[in-house]
Figure 1 (cartoon, rainbow, N blue to C red):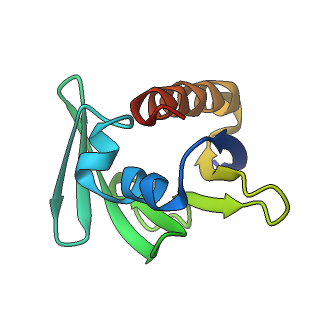
Figure 2 (cartoon, rainbow, N blue to C red; figure 1 turned 180 degrees about the vertical axis):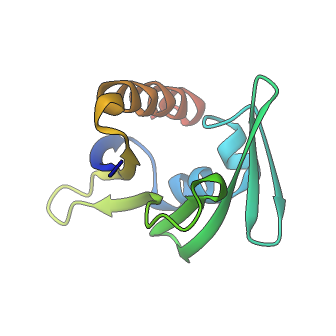
Length: 126
């Protein structure tokens, strides 16, 4: 089954440096994305309520973005990416999320990201 590409944008009241730490480090990701995050080489293990899932870091651009691939999705060309966008006019910081899901899971995936980003906002006060 072909995956549907989801692109989401969230305004976050913080600096790009703080936001990058939250999306690119195990301790930052534990603040909002997963209960526990372990790293070994370029693979992160995310743990939610005892369930584990591994993601390989495909690309990191300092203070800009990080792209992961779930290792259980095989050679699929899917990924999830978190990018930071700063509006040139207003200076507002946004988190751009790209993710892939089955077409019948689009609403559920969107709700999961909405909930995770709400946790991020609470964690950083933004």
